[in-house]
Amino acid sequence: MNDNHFPGGVWPVMLAPFTRENKIDYTALGELVEWYIRNGSSGLFAVCQSTEMFYLTLEERVGYARFVKEKAAGRVPVIASGHISDSFEDQVNEIRAIAATGVDAVILITNRLAKEEESDDIWMENMCRLLEALPEDIKLGFYECPYPYKRLLSADMIRRCAGTGRFYFLKDTCCDIDQIRAKLSAIQGTNMKLYNANTATLLDSLRLGAAGYSGVMANMQCRLYAALCENPSDNRMNALSDILTICALIERQVYPVNAKYYLQLEGLPITTFSRTKDETLLNATARKEVEMLKRITERCQELL
Image (tube, rainbow, N blue to C red; front, side, top):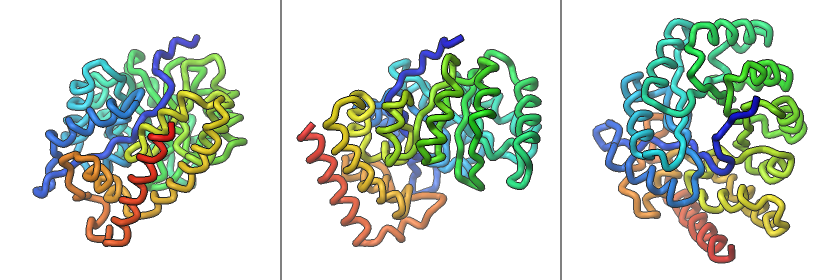
């Protein structure tokens, strides 16, 4: 069944550059796409939580996805999410609109398919209903998005979904190597590939057969994650994995403001404005920490 041509490696969860007038800055977004590709990205995850998708209109989500797909120009595949509504009918409309942009797959948010208190059986019923409502030629994936609540998929749920042949991508956020092992077993021989969002378990998961990384830190240390994904069997990657795991603690800062500041240090024309976080929370000490992270990243790249 496996005809998944989505490459392994790093799939950044893309940021949304904004102008000071609170509009998507497409000039900065174009340069951001180039930065990702230049720094070793295998694919791009447009319209996700890092894109502040819950704070974008449908028109903005569609425009963003279409722009990224066109800017990538076939150099790397582009996937996008963006179905954020509560109602089933609105979600179907959102998914169809995102698919019409030409992205290579539409990624379903797992917490949109059932309420937090509802069972996995209800989730599966809603999933089957959604598949019936969507054209079969739309390639799909899953993102275990932590907002507004985290809904992890069990290995059995993943096995059943992967068995349909319609799913190609799983952005896994369980942060648990035993669960990842079970999920990898569940998708073996299917179209679905697992991309880990967690740095601490990343190297172990790659050695078990995970396809790559799709997480926050690719917005800062993309090149280093590309190296890790390309050479997981190399024993030198053990030390790099340790360094990346400690560096990833910076996620607990004011994200995504800190990532936008990091990209400013990289020379990108991006503001630190965010719709989800007050940019002034990135104080002088936090900025110094981001500057230190950049120096660590550069030193690691030299050593590699």
